[in-house]
Structures are given as C-alpha cells and as structure tokens.
Length: 612
Image: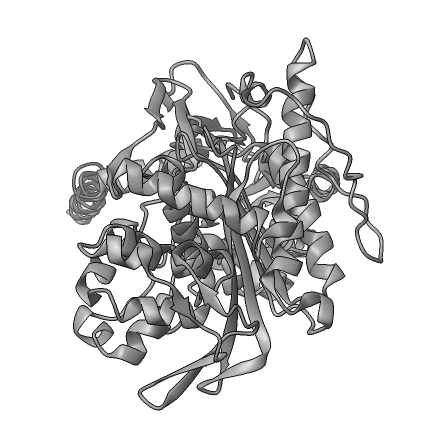
C-alpha cells in the first residue's frame, strides 16, 4: 500500500514538472517566441549601414573644387563587448576622437550596431585597426574604408563652396555655401546590408542575405571659372594688404548669361578648419552682406532722369555746383572738388553730390523708387546660395522729403548687396534686360543623369534700350574723363562707376572710415565681363582717399589678366591645365603674378573661344 502511494506521488510530481515544462515551452514558443527569436537573431546577424559617397563640386570646366579624401569610419557591436568594455574603451579612446569615460558610457548603454565615429583620419584608422587585431577585438569593432571632405583651394573659394561640418559623431552635413544649399543632393542615400555573425562576433556575408546598395550623391558643376577665381583672389589679396584695408570682395559676372565666374572675399576662411572662424565669416559677402554703396548707386537717379517726362529740360540744363555745397533742410551737402558748372553727363562723370542733389529736386520720388526696384534693388536675386540679403530702400513717402531724396540719390541711407549692385550694372550692359544671376551650371546624378541645367533667365526689361545705351555712353566717359580713369584699358572700352561711401560710426558718417566700390564692364559694344570690386576701410592716405585710387586699379589688374587669359586660351590648341590652386605657405605680403603688360587685338575675338 505504501509502495503504491509512493508511485502515485512520483507520478504526480512528474506530471507537475511536465506541466510546468510544457507551460514554459508554450511561454517561450508562443507568448515570448518573437522576443527571443529576435534576441537570438541579434547574435546571429546584424544590419550594417552602407555609407554613400558624397557628390563632388566642380568649376565650369570640370576641375574639382572639393576632394573626397580616403579615411576610415569606426563601427561597434556592443553585444560582443560585455566582458571587454574597459579594454575596448581604452583602445577606442586612443584614436583621440572621444575620451575614455564617454566611450565607456556609450558601450554600456548601446545594445546593437552603431557608428562610433565616422570619417577619422586615415593614419589614425590604420593604427587603431592594428591595435584591434592584436587585442582580438577586430570582430566586435570594425574599421571600414570611407572618405571625408577636403578643400584643396582652402580660402580661394571657401565662402561659395562652403564646407561639411558636424555637431556630433556621424552627423556630418553641409553647413555653408553650395555644400549647405544642396546638402540633400550631395549626400546621396545610405544603403544597408544584412550580415551574419559567428560566435566570436566576426562579420561574414552570405548571398542570401538582403542588401540595399548606397546611392552616391549628385555632382554639382558650378559656373565658377577657377582661373578667374584665382586671378581675382590674388589681386584682391594684394590690394587689401597694400592699402591696409580690413576687408575686400570681388565679383566677376558674365554679362551675357548672368553666370557668376568668380566670387572672392579676402580675408576668407579655411573650410578644412572651419571651427576656427565665426559663422559670419563662412558666408559670401557679395550675397549676404548689406552696405551703403555711395556714388555707385547714382546709376539709379541717372536712369530715373533719362526716363522722366521732363528729360529734355533736365538734359539741357546746366547745374551750378561752384559754391562747393548745397543746403537742404538745414544740412550741407558738399563736393570734394569744385566743378563750377556741370551738364547732365558731367554730374556722373565727376560724381558730384551737389549735382545729384539738384537733380533729385527735379524728379519724382516714386519714379526713383520704382526704377531702383526694376533694377533689382531690395529684391533677392534668387542666387543658389544660402542667406541672401534683400537690401533696404526708403518708402516713396519718405523719399519725398528733400534731404532724404538727395541722400538716397548719392547712395546714403539705403543698403544693397554687391551682387544686386553688380546685377544692376549688368542690366545696363545688356541693353536694359535684367538677368537672374546664377552659380550652378548643372546637377548630375550618378544614376539618373543630368537633373538640372542652369541657363540664362530674363527677369524683365528694366530699361529702354536707348536709355541703356545713353547710360553706357556716360559710364564710358566716367572712365575716360572722370573719377574712374585708373580703370581704363588699352584693349577695350570700359563702362563703370566709382563709389566712395562714408561709413556710419555711432550714427555719424565718419570722415576717416570709408567703403569703396567700382563696378565696370567691357567691351562696351558687346559687354562680356562685369567686375564689381569693394574695399572696406583702406588706411587713409593721400593715395587712398577715393575709390578711383583704390578700386579702379584693382578692377584694371583683374580685367587685364582676364584678357590675357582668354587670349592665351585662343592661341592654345588644347585647353590649359588647371592652375595649381594650392598656394605656398609663408609670411609677408602676396606678390601679384601679373606684370601689367598689355596686348591688343581686334576687339571681340578675345572672348570667341570661351565656351566653358
């Protein structure tokens, strides 16, 4: 009897544990099956992100402005480092990207594949890979080939090209210039690959595993001409340093198409070390910065007068400026030189503020305002660069005030950008047609071909053809007879205008600090090149008092070298190789490479071969 009871007890115990076991199996397979299957799969396979090569940026002739340089990226499988976290953290910290504590915390918190650091220096990656192999951690920590952004021309086109930056590991994006504006296209699309894992954490690939290939980023062809960009940079650097100015900017525009051939600031920043500079220094001055232009803005009142209903009487009148000043609303407006009596063209040839003030009293404020708007002032041009400024001009009601109208007429009390100013002069060069300036020639996808093709775009007819031609005649005389004599070229007729603007200091126009401009285009008969130059606060001397002495020689030096460049291209059977671009390091001032020699030709032939 006792034996039978014992057998029953054993049976019940067996059945009890059998039921428990069956219940647990049911729990594992049915209730928590997906959870544990997923966990087991995590030890058997992993998904790796495939990095997409970033698109390249070229000049108009296909010369590379940005280089994708070989480097390494570091990935980690933390689930295989549970007992080796400290050792792994020390090794990873040795590459100098993050400290030990930060690395150790990451390894402790993370549970699956992640990028520890993308785009580390090539030599650092090679050294880390050697250390990992010696420590037996090369399976759980991978060092894979990658590429990072390198800018071989450094500050020569930095504010236009921009750069790629990051605030945290693996989060690199375009932060300025073209790199920012077209980041989504340049970045491409990362892919992914499912790989198997062995017991030691080593990764292996099997054809049956799914993978999605990475799509490389698009390439962008800019309208910049690297040769002209380099010429503008060298001449601007020389000019800024020679007159001890604080800053300078140059813009070279193709009058016929609206293409930006060069956009240069000096000093600029080195995009390879962008963190050493303030964000304001990352932007192209010609696009993002506003300033009072001074006399170069007299273009607007010239156009207003020539288009006014009483133009005949305005053109016939003689303007007495012999007193040396004019008083408007209790304020004196002066000329530096006494020009006695001037006709209408003479006001602009000699850049008389008194003459322009007298002229403003004969004109309608609304017409002046509308003419400025037609020429593109206060309106963004739509250039393909971030942060474009719009400028500022008083409302017609405020311009009606005599003193305000006079001030605005000679470029005070308003703001413009160098690009807007240049484009207004380009409008005159093109017979009154305002074009949209652009800096992207083409966007090319590696998989879909050409996505975008930049082209000449007419915004509107801003001026009558005859009026534009009259303005060209006056602007030519500025260079041959007036304030722009030092911009004269032997080879071609130049049309242009100087501007010497006093700078506001604590709400008062300074007698010592000025901003100087010259905007000119050539040849007059069929304009091809427009060059706008700006020098900010040249050191005050007898030789640097006026824009004619500072910005006109800069214009002339750039123009002369462009002419020689184009003549040399015509005389060559093959396209010239890209210039060095990488400047020699060293102290002291930069010596200009041009020697000022001139050659003559038969006029238009100098541009005939420029199909870039």
